[in-house]
Length: 105
Image (tube, rainbow, N blue to C red; front, side, top):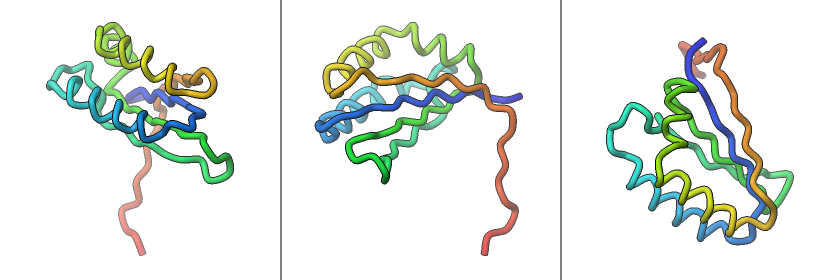
């Protein structure tokens, strides 16, 4: 097993503000610490307008929990919740396998 992924599902009519908040927190968290996320992908659900998913990848569960303890992360979560139309949902996923094709057509 390798890695950990957290998915944050949000329903919002204020996505532009959430996007700006995300850029702000990325600048603060991108400091080279081992607990910093490896990458994050923001997606919009095509079937449910106003629903967005933020997929955040970490080296490990432990790194994600260390990141969660950072004051910046707590501040981000509180501000994010205020911009959502309903409370965000968090999914915490252990990565069991990642597959990437060796060739693409």
